[in-house]
Length: 365
Image (cartoon, rainbow, N blue to C red):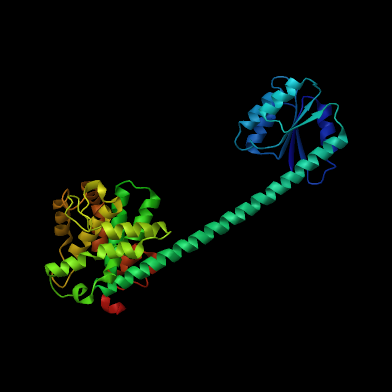
């Protein structure tokens, strides 16, 4: 425990140092000038401050105020030494932040007892602080484990869905990454960006409720079949609703709203403009772009430049113009994603799964 003693009397300081030397683990530093003590406190925070009231240049109350204004030592206990009997002085010292008072002439035994009491409190505070730090580290480690487990479950589920509906596992990965880029370009905060990135792979989880005959049909759907396919948005929201996880809550929003259109002609609710959640608006751009760039039984894959022009063409009708503008600003990164080889792509998308994601359905069948 480090004790700073401040008094303009050398004899008082010598007495304090000699008396406190009887206390084990107490280290005492003495100062004749308050300004020197303040300067030292800025570099070496103490555990207890003993100050005299009557000092030239700066009295004890002024010194206490200066100490309390220093964030590094604002909570340090302070004992004021005074020969004053005026209660107004003590009240002013208490208002300034004095913790205890000792009357001059100083009683050695009382001084030692007071300082020992503060040492006990100091040790207890240190113990509690260390325990709090351990608990904080443990909680952070536990939170990280839970987050990683949540990520793993989401990516495994999205991988399974991609295999079932005839898409490559890379589709959900690319949608996630492009959604992340759009969210970043829109200026969303880091936590929101991460949440969208983690939630977007579940955008088509509702296809689990679509019959295979429709989901895997090698050709264009009839109007009736397409109406059935449209139900996957509502199915997805139903599967994901009611979760306490922020990521799953966001995934439910995305699953339900990523087929809504800016002009109100989308589904399932026919929402328009800002009625559509921003998460759904972001993923709508990423999902359609990747669908255009991917081969389907009923169409060949488009060149990324042609798909880009289609996204631009649909700004203000299908897509939120702000999301399209964000997509354009991040276009160089998007183009790099789609020009990457499969193995390189996986190392960028989700490191914990880069070794597990297959580039083709046949690899995971």
